[in-house]
Length: 390
Image (cartoon, rainbow, N blue to C red; front, side, top):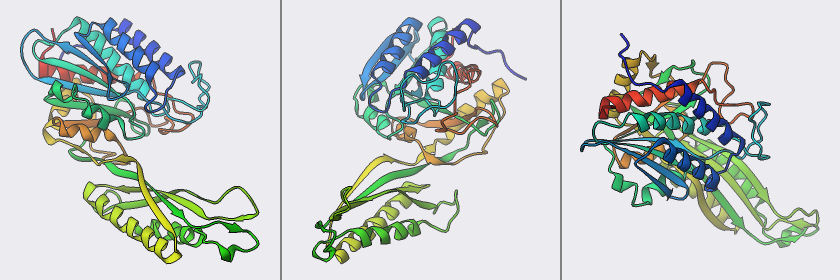
């Protein structure tokens, strides 16, 4: 039987939909979410937050709703950033910024917390505090790390941290949740070789990275394991970019680089994969008489769901009659939410956005407005169970 519970009101949802569409029209990339953050901060103040922190870990925003008595602190997280992809939805609220769009649904995640905030403005926690955290730079893996490095975030001392991510291909409103591993570790490895350029008529007088790059294009992917996902030993190497030399027919190249994305289910397997990949690159450099520089970009640690945090989410789903199961977990993509697990027990769940919905990062993706009510109701029930709501 579904228990009576606080739910977002119709006029709140209309405002949250309008907010989402406004955010959708004006997407901003990772670490550049200045206007998005200002919009969210103002929305949190208008909702009646006790305190709004801005400039947290970059452009992060934190809204705090205090109760009248001491008690636990529950943090809910959403993301601010969009993607450098051209939108092809054709909707009236389509991105107005060429080559940038909210094609992962972060606009919808923000709108869900906005609907929660408006209810919290009228129904304060009976004890403790609700903390709504809007994180920048999720897409490049830098945002959670930067927010945790800001002393204002650890000082909030949350007891529990929860988040959701919409998931196309999962039935609308259905939840995917499991204990343990939630998302893969991944990192972008850039190997740059330095040799010596030469005239194209006399390539033997130079030192070209061509052979080293060609061999690495085959050798790096071969480091992937035979273990199929989600086996604990799963490992995958994907070549993302290869380049060498100047754009000139008269020059034999003297420098080149290869970009590879390393992906594993666990951080331990990632450490072993990184070591093997670096050894390959340096051996190729040595064999070819090349200099070698290795750097890492968009690094994500593996994401794990705390068992007790999962229990609390499942209780809220059951109260509301929300269908849920472990299908779709763990996830092959990466997610930096896992870093928040160092601050408090945390868990993240998928919220189905529809079987026919275009996939995340697809130019035709648009977050379904009707999902705002579903996500907000779940989060409000979590807060109601943990803090009580007046």
